[in-house]
Length: 630
Image 1 (cartoon, rainbow, N blue to C red):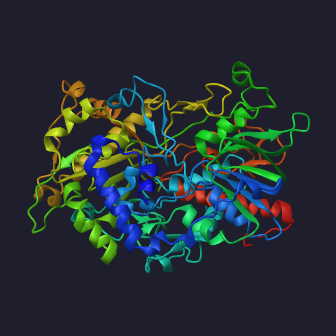
Image 2: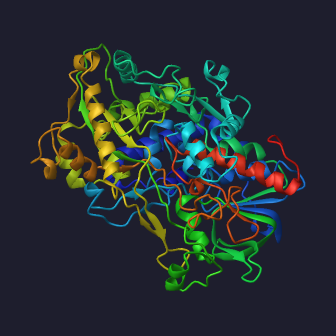
Image 3: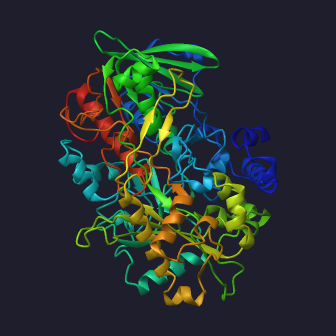
């Protein structure tokens, strides 16, 4: 059974203590937590001999969107559905909230990287690490489990661009449809649902710093009125909601696929890599896929539709490999153009953050530690509490126990549409000694040594500002016509000066929070070690913060927009408002890539809602009746 640990977590010898902890945790789960290891709830990987020659629907990608689509379409008993996923089923360790950073750079991660830049990710030698889930459940297995829907103005803007049915009122229906809210207070709210597959609840363990942060914002009168950033108003600080079930990760695999696993009309093939969508060049009809499994090529046909749910990086990649994309680029690569679609791979957006803004704190309380200092948390006591008491820090989300949304000076204060999100993290580059944070973020050993080495394992809080609505746009391109070769990712962060200016204001606001009375009582002090390249700048000036942002540039893992939704009059629109690929029959894209503009907040919950709506539209089109409940 230890083979699963090594297969799923390539943790190098240099991280020996962390590796041993994960091995012990895995074995404790295997022996003592039957609720987690229960094989009845694990997905059956169909044998290749059982594959049908054709299915009504083929779903490419079993991530946050594809899991929902496959589950919802297979509710129709007369439809046969094939779900193709490039990765395996989830690891037992993916269930444990606290250790989610260890899943990055593992075999569950595609491990994408951006092209090198001299404008951002300078602490990473100019190359940004972009983790993406290569596992059933996709990035909902690797992410920090934060349940955030975005802002009502996001969706109303989508609709105003010529996308009827994508307004906030309609999308609220789909958020509620997917949701099983288990916080008893919020379950009564008109903004939440209780009968969906996706379980949402508070994280089951918090550090003392969660209460400290709430007290600081109460002093500033910046608390969210309902303690619910997914409710009436997004403004202010609130407790983080998580995609959790009984304190454990609730991925889209667990939420949507395991309940459907018994359906004979749903086939799931794992470790299966789609190389091409099959499209008739004359009729432009998508009729199936070609994929590789166990070093063999398979061709399976779809009689109704092929549905692409491979995410913002690989959905445009696969479209281009199949002959749909910018004609000039495809011609350069040597791919026969079936449909010239200039927008494929364009419009790339991401939420970026200024990482590494660590405030050291003193501990005047009668507790061992205020923050999640890893040597005091990742130990036998924590494993024992997790296994026997179903309690303890392994149930925590140290990266953002509380979060808030706020307007900077660049946003109209009279509109509830914040342009900055703040994470308050009791787990930082300091508290874990670089065990997972340095490796996950990709910052160089030299940078870590210069900035954090002298304060490792000290109590601290990290205040992370996130840019919500970037003006900059990147793009995805092919390197070659080889499906196995990763695409070119031009993140293009900070192309617009506006973006870094908003981050600067977010950082300054974070600094002001440490001047509240409760943070002053903790003597909250910005890490005195300044990035060497920033040392000549006036301390706490705009140029100082700008320099920090350019060095510790951190993706929040939300690439979006590369198969933009829009009417045919939009030259960069890849799919129409019913998510059908312009110019191609029987092919849809349903995932985060269809967002015309990235939402104000984390993208996992919106992607699930997009898939819920997409599944209903498919049912409407093929069953020839309307309505929103099937």
